[in-house]
Image (cartoon, rainbow over all chains, first blue to last red; front, side, top):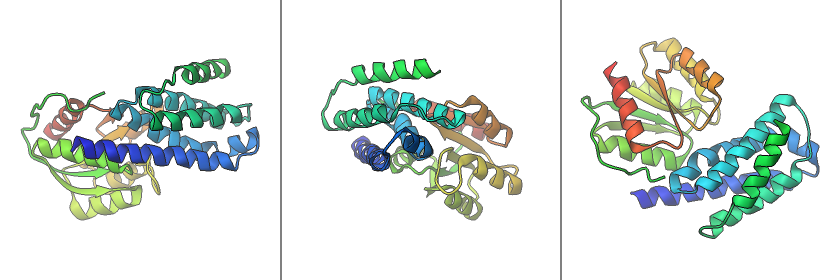
Amino acid sequence: MYEDFIKAAINEINEEISGIQSVLNYCKNNFDLYTNAEKIQKHTHKIKGLAPMINKDDLGLLSSLLDSILKKIMKEKTSIYLLELFITSIAEMTKSMTFSNYDLDKIKKHVSQIFSSIS
Amino acid sequence: MNIFIIMISFSNIMANILIGDDSTAIRMILKEILMMDDHNVVGEAKDGDETIVMYRALRPDLLLLDLAMPKKDGLAVIKEIISKHPEAKIILITASDDQQFIQHCLDSGALSFITKPFSFKNILKTVSEILAK
């Protein structure tokens, strides 16, 4: 049973990451990221809740930070220089789902610093 | 986090429970946890509209409800169900850390909330407490 849950959760997380990637594919600049923030946030929200339940705590934390940044963008209705950060983060998230024990520390710290700087 | 910790039974009352969550994985694990404690999962809804329709049709003893769902979010679902069934027992399941929003949901009629990631023990303890009310 637990294995079935893990399989379903991995599939869902991969779908959520693909969902973010699809949105980012048509974001050409930071303003596009701002206008699509709500769509992306729905995906980060799902990953944030599900990842820690399959022992992907770092992925959950990274997703939580991105989630907070997106909420801030939406709340303050502002477009800031974050498209590159999101593109890099999603690439790292994909790797963390592909390779076991993939280290997300560096990107987590970077995203955390960015979040602190805009808070 | 391993959600399967120790098998402890919390239920004095066997209840008919409806799960409203758009995540297949979450519905799957909640169902398993509840059934292990002898509850009966009468339905699984994957969006807000479906949750309302199933609630009306099944009249469960308890609804476990995700806040962020397609079509209608959890808050809209709570308001609609409580307006017609003020006795409804609803527990929120959420990954949100927005305390204001959670409080708004509680003020609208939800009786408790559980944050994701949740533990086996936390689910059964909260379900048991709410059923005993």
